[in-house]
Length: 279
Image (cartoon, rainbow, N blue to C red; front, side, top):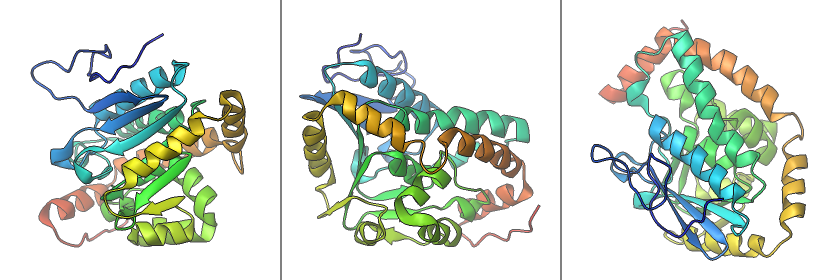
């Protein structure tokens, strides 16, 4: 069983060692008493969910969940930004087959959060866009700064929401609210997201992490078995996550191979509205 003591965890997965000289850590783990803190750590790019970050997050969550002295987990982003979404720089050459492989690997992030026995709290400052929105919504508690920004963004590049967003967001906001957020690409402030049920607690700018840590400390005082049982039952309501993930993998694979995705990525790079053609 791994003992977390605040040192950086890199690609090797071994405590006390960072990534090799050619790469920086994509996620950093430390502990604050009984609360583990997982920081998405690519601030220069606003913490996109790259392949490296995805793999590190899945591994660190799994290790934290198996560590008996850690009773709750907080996820936050470095540099005042939670997560700007998927790594669009790597999407342009995807085929249906490679797109499906990519989404199935990425779905491990949603599983690691939802299926963990430990409560997971998101601390959102700055933006939670695309996959960042999905990641936050999968958490048991979402704490956001009042000026944080939540946006689905998938439709802007011709994709559907993934990482379980079509399961987690309707569970938080209801189907009607989820439709508008996910189809209209509305941008919600932390205050607006709280009013719609997407966020559980809203705090002044710059205070999301401290507030999330306090939530984690409160949860750490609860019964681990009871909390794990609550999570397990809630994960099956109103529909099973695995079914949503299977369906999203099938549909997202088609979208990864579409011309509309290429157009969406080009428009993103060129800072212009996309001209989608439906194929």
